[in-house]
Length: 220
Image (tube, rainbow, N blue to C red):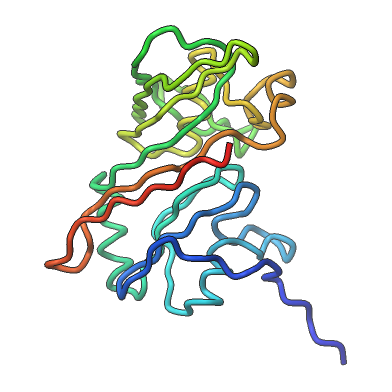
């Protein structure tokens, strides 16, 4: 009898930070954060992490197309504490994105409610009637006149599904390489979504430990 193929095919991840309570991993773009439906979607960052650290547990997620920092708890109690910190918005999250066009103002805010676009799942949409509140702050880092694109630093007050992608599209600056929301001409400008979870800061879940601030420079 032939042994079944290992559904977790990828290499073991390298921890950017590790202690007795948690791990921080830099997720590559194009890798699921957690398993999807069906046998072909079992390879994911969570499975790779748990193969190396069996007591690692998921605390939060990133989109498959997004790269960057993800926190994993070590054990149930740390998962509970860290999960509560994310739910209560006690974790500071910063992203870097490259968007189409020139963003004129140096800083700004998008405050548009979001909800599921049910006929077109997994897409989300601005839904002023029934959507959940969602707020994104942005700051211009640079403008590339040759490529007509703007590099932004983004911070979240809320963590809705696809929030950054939908908010930036809604203000006329879709993220380059966004195959879900950008028009074809903007999708074609990058082989991947140019969105990276670049920084996390939060109180350590163990009493007496210093707060953590971890950064990952974008690979684009």
